[in-house]
Length: 278
Image (tube, rainbow, N blue to C red):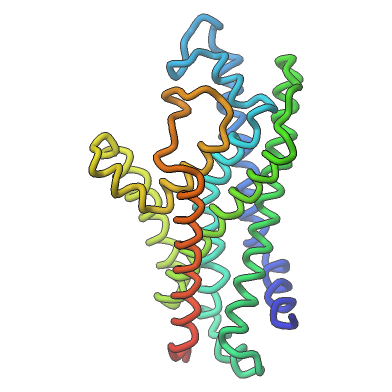
C-alpha cells in the first residue's frame, strides 16, 4: 500500500499526466463532436454526407449515442495514443532519471514496485475514462438541446459497460507503452515504436488491405481491431457503412484484449524483475 501511495503521488504531481489528460478531453470535444457539428450546421439539409445524410450525423452526436461517440474517438481512437504515451512515460522515465536503483534499495521487492506502478497507472486511466465520458455527456446534451433532441439517454447499464470498455482499451494501449519502455529502458523509443505500430500497422496497413479476407482473418488477432469491435458492439444504431458489423463478437474482443493486457504486464514485470537496472 505504501508503494502504491508513492507511485500515485508521483503520477498525481507530474504535470505531463494532466497535460495528456487535458489534450485527450480537448480532442474528444473538438474532433468527436466539434467537427461533426460544424459539418451539420454548415451543409444544406439536402446534401448527403458520408452516405447517410445529415440526419445520421446528428444521430451520432445526440445524447442517445454519446457512449459510442466518446468511445469511437476517445476510447478507440486518439486516446489509445495518449494512453500509450502515458504508459511509456510512467515507466520509461525512471530509466532516464536513473531512479529505479534507488527505489529498489528502499525495501519493496521489484514486483511489488511494478504492481504499485501498474495500479497507479490504472487509476489515472480510470480518471481519464471518467472525465472523457463526463465531457462527452455534457457536449452531447448541448448538441441535443440545440437540435431539440435532449432525450433519450442511454441506460445506466450501457454507460457502465461503456466505462468498462473504455478503461480496458486504454489499459491495453498503456500496457503496450509500458512493455516497450521496460524492454528498451527509455520512454522516447517506446513512444516512437508504439505510435508507428498503432498508426502504420493498425491504421494504414489494415485500412488499405482490409478488403482482403485473409487480412481480415489476421486483423482479428490484433488489439486495435478487437478494441473497435468491442466499441461497435455497444452501438444501438442501425448498421451502415459508417456503423459496420464488428469483425468479432463482444466476448471474443474482451477476451483478446484481456490476453494482451495480461501478456504485456507479465512481460514487463518479468523483465523488470530479472534485468539489471544499473
